[in-house]
Amino acid sequence: MKNMIKILVVALTTLSFSALGFAQAKPATPATPATPAAPAAEKKTEMKSEKAKTHRVTGEVTSLDAKAGTFAVKEKDKEIKLTADSKSAKDTLEKVKVGDMVRVSYTEKDGKMIASSVKAESKKATEKKADVTEKKPATK
View 1 (cartoon, helix red, strand yellow):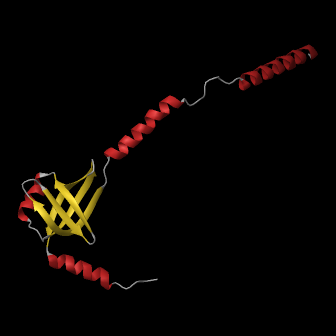
View 2 (view 1 turned 120 degrees about the horizontal axis):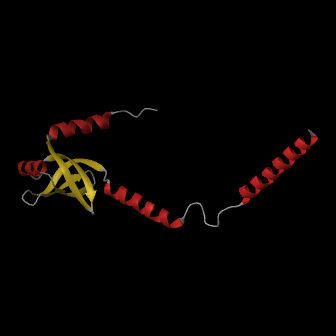
View 3 (view 1 turned 90 degrees about the vertical axis):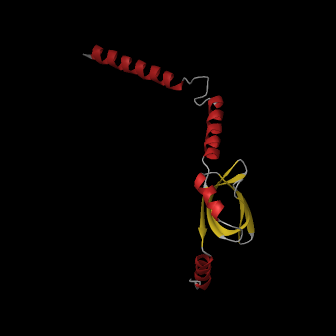
């Protein structure tokens, strides 16, 4: 019986020391290689640039070329030059004239503002919206 316990203790001690030796052995190469990480970062930036955010602007048409599909809208202090890409936006441009109020949805692509939707608005409706926002009292 005592011999059995001695053999068991020696076997367990040997196993524990060998397990510690394996736990300390680390591979010479790093766990996360640097070369595959760089293309992954490039893919993320490409995806961000492909996914363009839609902006909206409401203002007065300052210049218009319906045949070319280009126009400019002035909103408060800034003027935005846009290009219509869809057939419905180009059709709306043919009905609009300089001085009309429009609401435009657009995206920025390659440094150009591309209008996806153009809607004509009545001047009275936009004036009412402006009056309502100006008349609201500031709350604390």
